[in-house]
Image 1 (cartoon, one colour):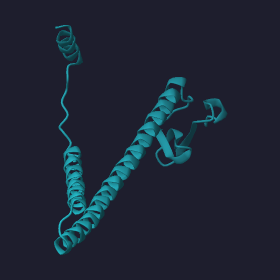
Image 2 (cartoon, one colour):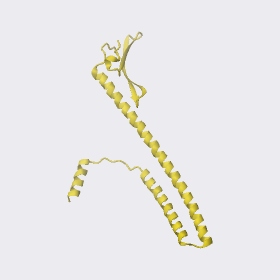
Image 3 (cartoon, helix red, strand yellow):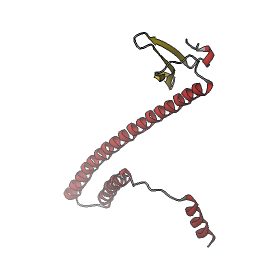
Image 4 (spheres, helix red, strand yellow):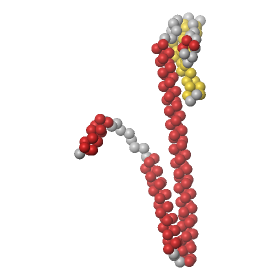
Length: 173
């Protein structure tokens, strides 16, 4: 016997196959796994014994909820992967930008210092050298900050009730 897709809301299909060699019937219920509108496969539930009755509402609901849960998990996994890829790209671009800026600032500093040595140090050359040094230091600080942010602190369980009481006590005192 076979349940029609219309009888199951159009999302599930069932089929039974008789195995003549073992005189058993294998029935299965499947539902398509759709993620972001794209068919990613099917989730199948198989019985190994003879089954004459159609799958019940509870079994169909279980299949549907399992499908939704797996679809949601796959969608979250894909989103997390995209975020990791974007973070990695941002890190690489940040490093390239800092490297290129440092190289250009070093060139500016070198030329300014050479001009000051040839023509005598002036207030303008001193200001340029000071500003270039500040920009180089700023780039170093950005690198240091990035390395601190890249470190992932271990997670720990927190008792929110106790935390709320401590904060409340702290604020009221």
